[in-house]
Length: 203
Image (cartoon, rainbow, N blue to C red; front, side, top):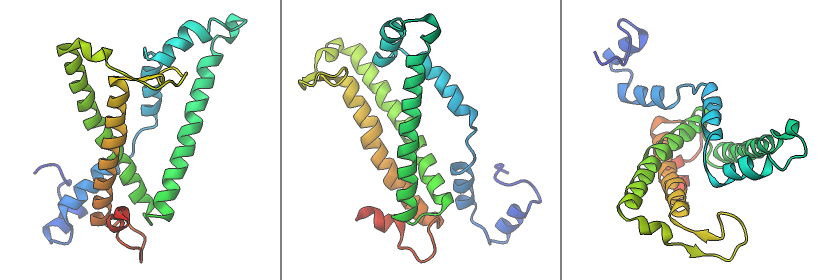
């Protein structure tokens, strides 16, 4: 009735015979469904038109400083390659950690990754919306910053933008991780003979 299973399907039959839990089935179907690769390309196009600090440096300083117009694309390409390299490195580390230390199956690793991404995008977005409303209501908030003395752009002073990123990525990300590990244990995405992932996560 709610579109969980097709009529007269094997899944519906197992549910009617009380051999399958529709709640767990739906969690699994939603949280591990394939993410289209073109989504990454679309995100890249959108991010490429951003007006962040480093993007503006590429547009207005680095690319114009190239000796030839034919090389104007090089700073952006190097930035993209650097981003890709770090994503590969962190992704490999995360996957290896989940597999070897937390003893998750491939499906479990995918579940945790998708769950955390969804959690951070959802509640991190809420944090940024609230931050934007705060700035609109009290513009003087933009003037508050902690001077670090570090001679690196975006790190020389820590303002509301920095703390919004910390809240949305670090704090919300950690909460999402622990929630995901609990669901992994409930869904049974753990290698046979391994300790429950939620227990391991607390150590």
